[in-house]
Image (cartoon, rainbow, N blue to C red):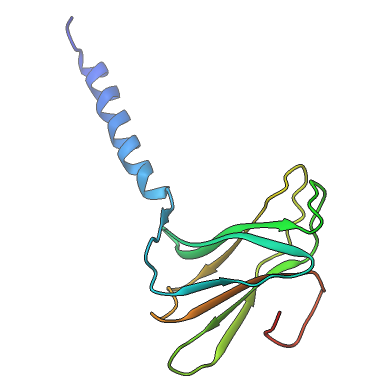
Amino acid sequence: MEITGLKRLVTVSAFVLIAASCAWIPKYVSEPGVSIELVPASTGRIASAHFWEDSKGFALRGEVVPIPVTKGPLFGHVDIAVTNPETAAAECSTTRQRIAVRKVRKPYSKRFDQLPAAGSIVRVWHHDAPNHEACSS
């Protein structure tokens, strides 16, 4: 069987596309150097929380399960408090509201410019009120 120029071009192009697409796949950050604490709440239980890295930077991603467990919509958002070990100051942020239906586990994601400093504590919990002033569960 003779390989023509067109077949060779298609084969090489396919390999290049496959290799380049790996850069778009998020990578799990296995040892971020921070402690992630899942705080219980009466409206939703955080099932998972992990840092991931992609081409845009870092993100804390996971899933929240409503209480009581339902495949219906989950109102509210996930709060994230990052406490720096050196200053003991907490930086609070929230994810956008998730109303995913037909799934028990609702995904959430919060983008970070960089990973929190080593030794930081990241507290994560579900919050269903539309607003709040403090960084507490």
